[in-house]
Image (tube, rainbow, N blue to C red; front, side, top):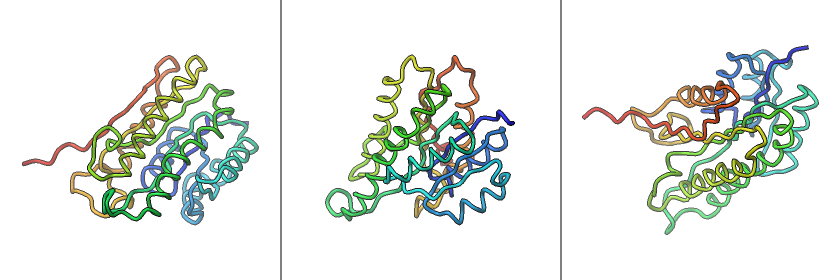
Length: 230
């Protein structure tokens, strides 16, 4: 029976989540991958070792029932969860606070903030048992003021979740890391500069954090692209 660690990644079907799944697989992790797109997850499962090594689940992170079902399935399949990467998210809508589509706001806030909170809540019992590692995808946009950006506001909230849960878990043995990317070349953005980060860059940051010895808690990793040459 394998004792390889298990990593659960939300928003795993593309971008940062997909890249992190590949990096974790190379590092010897068994994987639990969730996203709204089951077809993309199935292809990733086949690539990374099949059902013996990779559990996939269609999941709407806004649903407590969906999220709890993924965690229950993960524990039934692998018996443990050692790392959780709270990564599912969506971008915003142009127009600022004056003219953005409020329905887009609603979905974004429920995904980026409420969904992240549900993932944390569902996974904490398993992480307490494993003394595992909780990681959250924040953003450089959650550290600065961006005019008219509700997306930035949601990422400020993710930073607050990270800080708050770290204090709640102090002394539990669970490590908490905020991973805060700048602009990343993913389908998340419609327009990207030539010097944008790659999803693999952020995956490497995640793997750096989880690879540290148990006495090292990497609280935050802010990753920005090198400024373009003038």
